[in-house]
Length: 311
Ligand code: NAD
Ligand code: UDP
Image 1: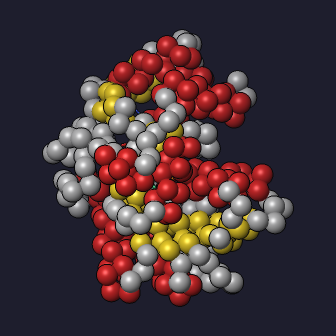
Image 2: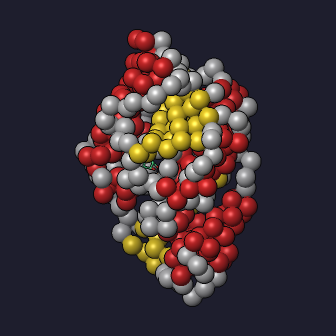
């Protein structure tokens, strides 16, 4: 197959490109590098199965030749990034998704939207299953991301219903691993890099809020299975292994050691208090379940950042 990955120079997108190339597909990665980097795909340069296009998906997308599938991942994804780029985040979720859907329709390609657990906002049901409509503050600072993704989901399903486009929606929960940016502000690189540098670990609030962390190879496998299968979704892709942020900080401190203490900083506005995916739909419809355990995934990520920070 010939596949387009928007956001292909980002964290998850670059791992998805690797997997698709390894599976024998021809891959076109398209990215404007706002939060991604060509470092993430440099090892694919020169591979005849791989091509990179530097382009903003909110502008008309031209890709020559046939396309069988479009994975639409382009969007700032970390809270720090989408608060830095609020308008671009709304634009890429709305205009960018429109352009990517239009391209898929023109090429007769399937389409997968990388949506997010943030569509559930600060959830009032736990764990979150796909039939929960969410609790989002549209005018809060996180609304720029949450509402952009909610609009993107609605637009993708409108293309499916009106144009008959083969659409898939993945609601991805907190994914981590190598190639996250050390400074993207997300909790996994933040704590690991703070501990490696001997700095204090900055827990926001009292650390009682929970997250469920999924290793990137599992997330990529879930996306591929969703693309191949017949279920349009939305399907939650995440690891139900839930823990408090404080416990996560203590675990990272114990794994890395060092002189840093755990310090408490103000909780960001609208920070969800709890988050854990119900993955029964992914299990039954995709035969997917995460395989990489927390210790294995975190150890691999620590090694990556140790090398990256030259420690
Ligand atoms: P990332 O920031 O590393 O990757 C996103 C990529 O999209 C970057 O390379 C960026 O430059 C590119 N991009 C942004 N706006 C663009 C535009 N207008 N035109 C072209 N390219 C653009 O983030 P990530 O963690 O790899 O996230 C990838 C996707 O998965 C995002 O859509 C995100 O919303 C979704 N997601 C990620 C997580 C997670 O935990 N990592 C969770 C839920 C959803
Ligand atoms: N967090 C934290 N310290 C940090 C960065 C994040 O305590 O230095 C918390 C954040 O408030 C949230 C959780 O960790 O409760 C996960 O944050 P992240 O930005 O990784 O992703 P989110 O799930 O909020 O999108």
